[in-house]
Image (cartoon, rainbow, N blue to C red; front, side, top):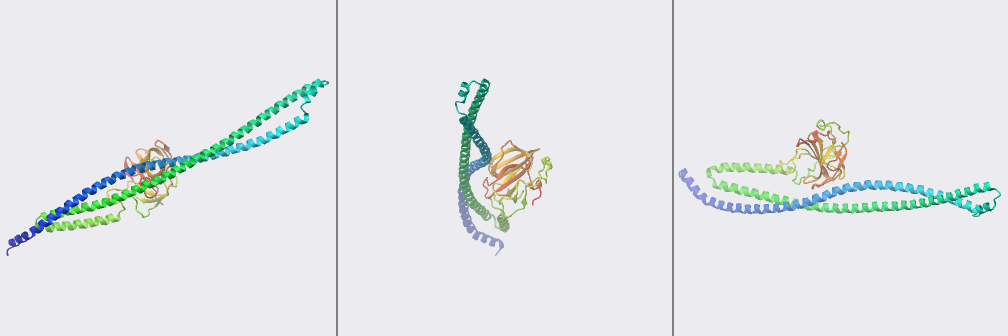
Length: 421
């Protein structure tokens, strides 16, 4: 049998099989397309719901930041109020001492008047044998009476001041207690709302990841069906080359899956491994920011959990343009260099964020804060507290996002700050 005849017979035998495979593949491809369209609709709906929760989270965290600032201000007021209460108490003690002394003097005068008798001036008037003595004595009694009247007036004024001070003390204590109780209650309520928002956001994020994974799987199936259909439609002469290409694609996909498994999750959380310690202690640098490379302190004491330039999630195209420093919630964040606050507000992805302008195109950024201690336009010194560490922006654990910009371009903070400890 000739080779041409053999090839013809093989083609006749394979054609019905290939036709059936093509029809089946076409059906699978159409089903995959429908699944992909449906999943895309679900993803769009989830993203819309997630956007609404993020807006609520922004409002709640912004209110939390403002309330933290109010609480700190109230603490200062309470401290001032306690000082005022101490001053009022000291003044009250002085007035009590003055009152007791005035009572003693009034008692002495009363006893003297009683011993002298109320008719002494009348007896002197009737007995005019010594006119000079009468005149002097009468003048003495006039002075004595005036002194008694002034002493009584002073005593009454002391009693009035004592009553006013006691009233002021009570009012001050009541006002401060009411303010603290009201703010504590509001803070607890907002903390509960914030927790609910974060739980809702985490749930939506989990749903989106599950839908995304399913969508990715269906898209891979769709692509695979397309490749199968293309392979069926090609001639037998190209089958060997297509087989080799499919094998290479399989190896690449396996390598990509292996690399993806070794990357952090897309949730934006840093890897769980511990990074090096960094410190905000030490002398501040007072020269121009452009000459501060390697001389600046870190903004907080903590541990680096994400470095500059490392992948941010399982997408290698997204990288950290700053660093993430793990620290205790409520820890104070310090300015690494003197500058002016150009932004102090909530920003999606960064939470409560402070941006300092250091001049000549240099900026430093501090994000995911619990509260902001400065407002836009404020001028701050190196080492001054500007915020407190938190989890705003959807973070799961307390950490500070810290970045440096040079003429709008990100720069590695590790090159500007002193070596890690």
